[in-house]
Length: 174
Image 1 (cartoon, rainbow, N blue to C red):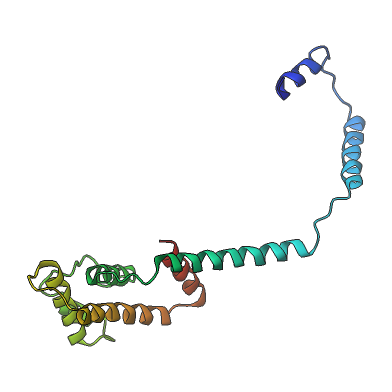
Image 2: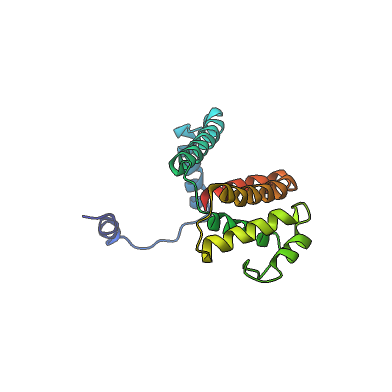
């Protein structure tokens, strides 16, 4: 028999009575004394320990996730997409996909810390990888990766500490 049926059975023959304020106060005091009699107290070390364990579990999860991903080298098109996503997240080069004729000029204006030759090489490499007949060399792929990493490092260096924490966590999660 479930709990609801038991409660209904036990209250079936009872009439509803109005409790006086003294009875309500006495019932409240009884409840307080029962709680005090339980003598339940959270140990002072428990919240700190829980916080440390939570942080350790989070760090372990991040480490495991990085380890699981391994050192799989992604294609230069992937890193170019990440580069565009990163730049557009900071409201630069919005609406551009990298195939525009003036992409390099717009990128030079928006990203003054990158040399124009690196931006041009990156755009040429990604175009060659996407539409060209000649395969892209590993050195060219590495150049695209380094442009992405340099841009990420530039933005990261200008963030406040809380933004850095959010960025690292969101990068790991997504």
